Length: 399
Ligand SMILES: *Cc1c(COP(=O)(O)O)cnc(C)c1O
Image (cartoon, rainbow, N blue to C red; front, side):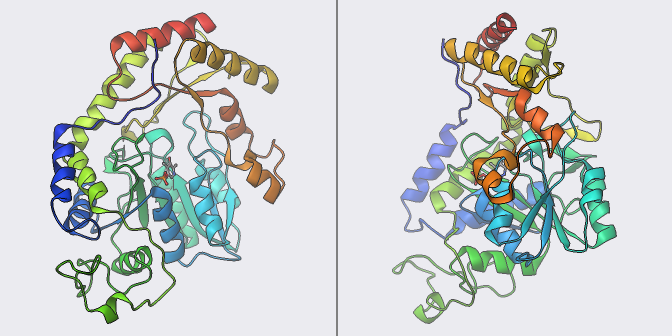
């Protein structure tokens, strides 16, 4: 049997909407992008959405929009996908890591507080695996110290902390979602910034579109800008060729946006299917000795399941034995045709970070322990009871 780690959930409507776009002259900067932005913003309870071509681009634009740069410190988590920290480095600001809580893998507010210095300008928090971090406490710490909060909600669309969605204005100045094919919903490649701040929106829309003044309608007298020449709605050339600031090409194309619109229309269905698979795993693996299942904090009123990450060997004392046990379980899974990943590998231990900052291990013990003991097992909407049973049996035998 072969069991895949992830698979997108694409229906007939997704295919139809993408096809419809192909029959129009608008393949970029068109109405689907605007529709997608409005749909995500509405869902999260935000005034604005800014569609971009990846979650990473969204994070980069926010770091720039908030003016974070050389000499600024941004407190963030080392237990994440590398993009959350790289976005800070793009602008030569310094990621200052704060260790996580073992139970959830999310950043520990007490360690954020301890990491604040006179140079701290922002907190870039991450909702790991679809579970919100302690968003209320993070917001409160930021308020006390006058810091900006950027929420990397790339793994957490639809998740709720104390009844309010991840990415909402209650929790952060701005947030980013990501739509790579392994996420809860996908646009192929893609991402979305959400915020209530029109200035940040204007900056991000301009920067995503080569620094042009107005990319799309929606903010302060914006005229629809436009795509390739020859399509209706294109502005005069002097506007299209006028670049007011350093910009990028971070635009989300119309095909991707159409896919996003279709996925957003059934986001609740997509999330419910993932919840179902999580429940199957909970049942199958719940009684297996030596397996620790994901633990959901009481403040999380809704988990948005992104991946299913179990831990093995956490109870062993020596790090070497933890790593060895995890390796042997993964070997058994792979030999049995079950895809799996060590997830996450701590950011500070990645070769580039070791080299640049001199990290050697031991700096963030909780993150490192999670990094040695965690395994992402197959998780997607099409997973069957039979596959879950099979994965469970292989893990049971490996232990
Ligand atoms: C997926 C993800 C991103 C963004 O990924 P892209 O591939 O650039 O869309 C950023 N941060 C985290 C934590 C993620 O999981």
